[in-house]
Length: 404
Image (cartoon, rainbow, N blue to C red; front, side, top):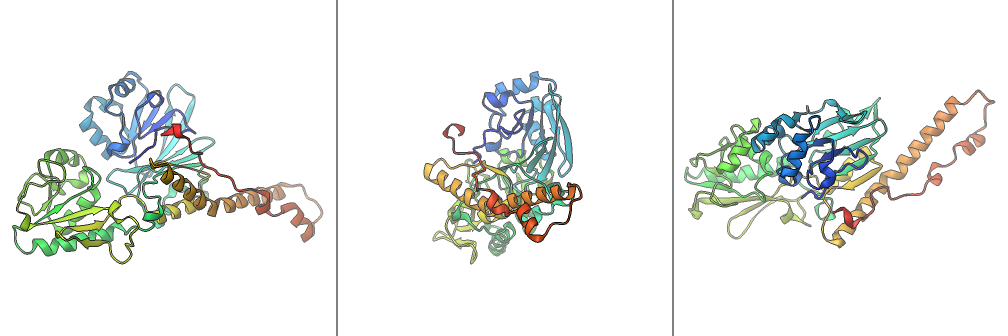
């Protein structure tokens, strides 16, 4: 669950994914990365809505899918919602200020419509990842991360640290998990039309991509309750994924209560539980599925990046500072997270500083007036050893109990 308070400290006029508290009510531009409840805190509060509606030049920016969902939930805010295109840079004027902000929404791979936000000002580049799961190889293909053939300097990254933990170092690709699930489904439902599958997700929302892929591969829709159906029908990609008809053999949260389904003949029901927490400290390299004593299948499935994937992302962009956006409540786990972050950042920070210093020195040499040619020893004196010129620093926000 996100613990981010909504404020991008380097751009105090904006708020992202949190709309409660006085600091966010005064913001001049709002952004929403995706429509999951822990990123929408405060949106339904009358104080936020009044503050947004009463200021004619203040808007909330989100992807087209998120805007459709917001219009369904909060029709009174329709005039205050602006769609932002994915992978294209958008110049936004900050109202009541003589300044502009460039923002690029990048696919985050967490759920339909989810994005990261790359904010660029005259002096800073800030990346807010939101919830994400995109492979490191795919992230390297994002053009927005490059300028003049070089990786852009990221001054600060607000990072999804849901599974930034040694207990979740490696998580199977979603395609592998989905393949395992569909194999179980196919074997079960082929026995008879009365054999059904109960897909039991860990949360009311968040399984959109999973549902889409299962429905597409198996070739039938998933029966859900009316509340879930009314939300998912706002997502064009899910038009044929869910249904209100109980005749399908695939069911999920279609009963009177959460995690229950409409069918009751347990002998003909095969339950599949996709989750990540259950697999803590377990090796998923050998297998990511197991069957329990009751015949229930558990499958390791995650729409958040693993520790390994986060490390690769950090090593690619080499952000100067990092702020975790999912901080554990336990003091011990919190300390472990910051210690691990320090260790990961130290693997690239010293080298990044060396490269920056070398670049500055070579530019000074290039721009220097013509002088007699120096010997190798003299150049060694000029360039020195960058690694000796810098001390490692903790470059992220220090632990502050008042920030939670």
